[in-house]
Amino acid sequence: MPDVTGTDPTTAPSVTEGPSGLRNAVEWTAIIVVAVGFALLVRGFAFQTFFIPSTSMVPRLQVEDRVLVNKLTYDLRDPARGDIVVFRTPPSSNITNMDDLVKRIVGMPGETIEGRDGRIYINGNLLEEPYLGSEVQSKTFGPAEVPANSYYMLGDNRQSSNDSTVWGPASRDLFVGPVFATIWPLNRIDIPGWLWFVPLGLVLATLLYYLFRRRARDRDPEPV
Image (cartoon, rainbow, N blue to C red; front, side, top):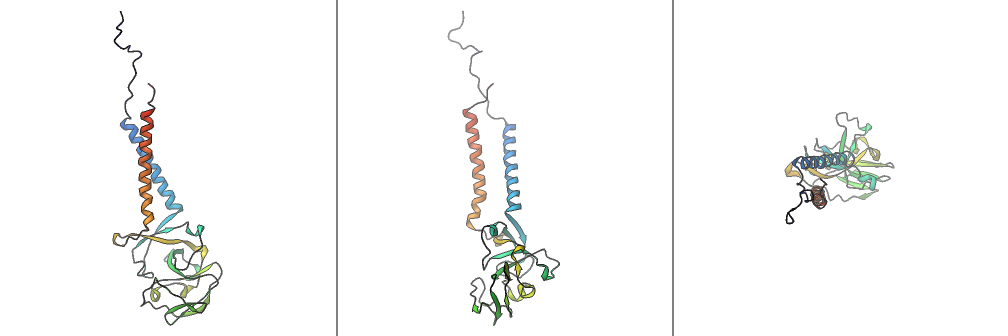
């Protein structure tokens, strides 16, 4: 006589064991690989780091600072006066030991720029430069007309800068992008507030993905 109170072992529901350690390891490895690949892709196409070897941009940039450049900015907008820009060394500069330079945009295309009495004049009008200390004295030069698609680039450390006063305006075609963050050394870190949300967003997205995947797996167990 069959046991009416028992359970037929052929029809008993099976219990699915939780995800194995190997599966977790594979999933986290895949997540890390994707994250690293994304970071390398962003670095290659959007951002690039540069080392500051000279005093030409002191005090804004110090020797041995590491800065972050946004390579996509000038695809979205035109360069603006006051931007600190990394650009490839102009052929006219005769500088042979540096592939890239960093200077500030002071003169715009079509303008006439002049250094006189320690100050900069644009089209005959005194240029206010709030990013400079009151003690900074510009070199005497010009007047010089800035060609189309070119920019007059000056270092903030005006008397110790190999810049457009020496080799003329720089073509926009040479621009890599503007400096928007100092990332090293630790006591010099200067990062826009919004940039902190990028790694936080990646961490949050990873955690949410893992959480939803766990819930989906618990809701729909694999057949046995």
